[in-house]
Length: 162
Ligand SMILES: Cc1cc2nc3c(=O)[nH]c(=O)nc-3n(C[C@H](O)[C@H](O)[C@H](O)COP(=O)(O)O)c2cc1C
Image: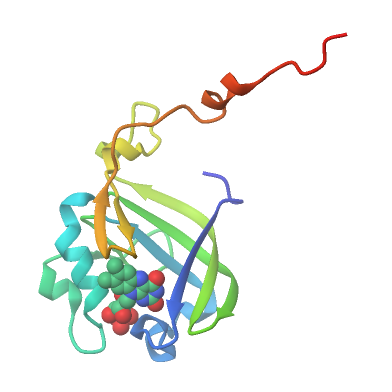
């Protein structure tokens, strides 16, 4: 995957994951790991979002498995998640109570059965969770709605005909 790809997220100042003591060794490399849970992991994902690592071990509580990659010097990824994205923080932008993090994608680890025949992760196989913050509800992805860079072509008109 290309090095120019970017990932963005925002973290609240109070998060344990932002604590200098926790970040410690990752501060130097500025690497972080983004794991994409599938719909089957909805309860575990929610728990990771509502419990703090300050007080308990989220892996122990949910039974998910942290795996330290042998090839990259990044925080562990979650074995049960079909996709893990290794990023390096490029920009940190304070926005009110949160910090917007722009990360360069260094590599993508994908389960074989989350990839199509071309070896590229396929969203219909990954079945990632989507979150609606207004409804405080998780959704799964639906059917493909249309082909990008082509379905809009039906509106193309020749406006000048001499
Ligand atoms: C659905 C959901 C979405 C969340 N989104 C964010 C977010 O975008 N940024 C953030 O800082 N915290 C977010 N949180 C809250 C943190 O996940 C939560 O405070 C968690 O306990 C932090 O864990 P930690 O203390 O181990 O870092 C979200 C929580 C849930 C349940």
